[in-house]
Length: 336
Ligand SMILES: Nc1ncnc2c1ncn2[C@@H]1O[C@H](COP(=O)(O)OP(=O)(O)OP(=O)(O)O)[C@@H](O)[C@H]1O
Image 1 (cartoon, protein in one colour):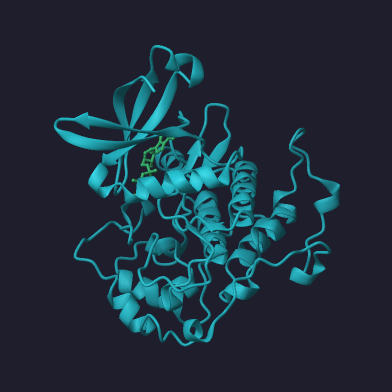
Image 2 (cartoon, protein in one colour):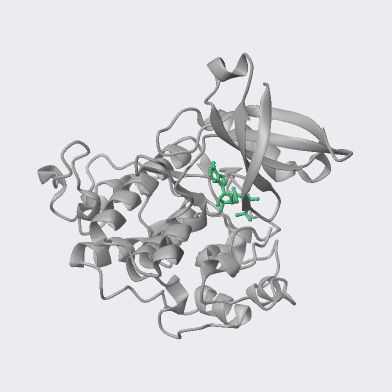
C-alpha cells in the first residue's frame, strides 16, 4: 500500500495512532483517509494479535475495520503498522470528557445497543475482547460507534490466564479472583461502561468521589456481594439492564445475546422507535425461548485458584508505583 503518515491522533500503551492518507494506485483500493496504529516491530505482539483477531472476526458494522498491515523503517527503527477505519469523532471517553457530563439516555441506549451487537459477533465467533471500556469504543462521522483495540482479545479457551489483562476499573470478579477472562468478563465491563455513559463518572467512583487505592478497589471487586452502584439518573429499564451485567457469578451473568433482547435496547434500527416484541423484560435467563448458553466450562483448579495463586497474591501483583488520578478512567493503568 502507498501511504503517507500524517499527524498523531492518539497514544496507547503499546502504540501510536496517526492519520494516514493513501496515494498512487492505493487511493482506489483503500479509503483516502485511514488511522494507522504503529509500534516498533520488536514490541508489536499486541498489534499483530489485533490484526489476527480482526481477520478472524471478519466484517461486522459494530467493529472497527482493518485494511491490512505493513512495515516501514522510520528514524532507523523498523515499525509495524496496522491500517484501520478512521473514527473522526474520537472515543466515547473523549466525548464524555469534553462535555464533562453524562450522555442523554437515548444516546446511552443507542451506543449500548451497538456495543452489545459487536459483543454478540465477538463472542459468537469464540473470542473475548478483554478490554471493553469507553476509550475503546470509537465514534464515527455518522454518529455510529464501533468497538476497537483488539490487542488483548483472545480465543475462548476455558483456561486460566496466568497474567492479569485489561483495565482494573472494568475488571470482573472472576478475572480478579481466578484469572478467568471469558465472554462474561466483557459483559461486566459493558455494565461499567453503561454506568460511565449515564453518570459521567467511572463505575466504582460513584460512591467515594475519588478512589485512590487500586488494592482496595480489587478487593471490593473480588470479594463480597458489592457491585458498582447503579446511577439514579437511569430509567428503570436502564437500571435493570445494568443489574444483569453486574451479576457477580459469571455463570449467571446475562450473555450479549440475551442483553440484545432487553427492553433497554429495544429500539427499531430504522425508525428509532421501541420494538414492541422486546417491550417486556424477561425475569431470568430461562425466559429466553431460543437462548443458547455460551457459559464457560468451570474446572476445579479454576474454582479453587490452585493454578494461579490466591486472590490476595494475584491482587498484590497488580500494585503499581504509579499514582494515577482514579477519578477518570483514562488514567487507569492497563495491566497486561
Ligand atoms: N481507528 C481509529 N480512528 C481514530 N482514532 C483512533 C483509532 N484507533 C485508535 N484511535 C485513537 O488512539 C488512541 C489509542 O488507540 P488504542 O487504544 O487502540 O491503542 P492501544 O495501544 O491498544 O492502547 P491501550 O491498549 O493502552 O488502550 C485511542 O484512544 C483513540 O483516541
